[in-house]
Image (cartoon, rainbow, N blue to C red; front, top):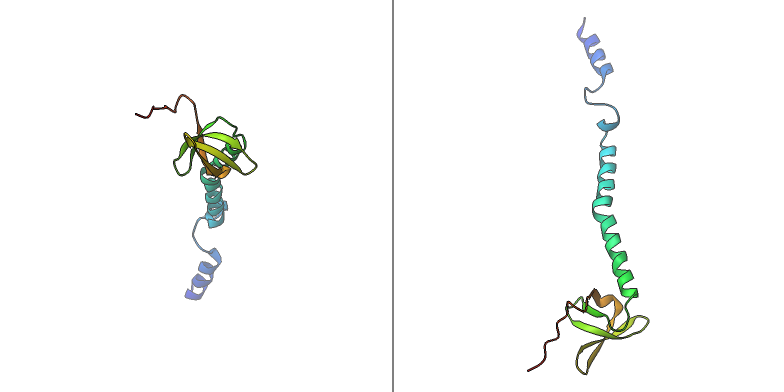
Length: 114
C-alpha cells in the first residue's frame, strides 16, 4: 500500500473515541440538571410551601418565633400583619412573613420576674 491510501483509510475510519448515546456530553449535562432538581430545588420548594401554609394558618394564641428571634404570643391577626405580645403590655406588629415557626405551648416556659 502506498502512503496516500493509508492516509485515506485513516480518515475514513473516523475518531477512535466511544460512540453512542453516552459518548456525547449532552446526556451527562441533562442528567446533572435532573439530579440538581431533585437534590436542591424540589426540597427547597417543599420547605417554602410548608412555611407559607404555616403563616396563613396563624391564629390568636399561637406561640411564635420570628426570623429575628423574638418569642411571643399572637394577640391578633390581620390580612398581612399580626400583633405579637412580647411581654406584659408590650405588643409589636409584624408581617406574617416574619414568623419563622410556631412553638408548642409546653416549649415556652414563663419565668416570673423577681
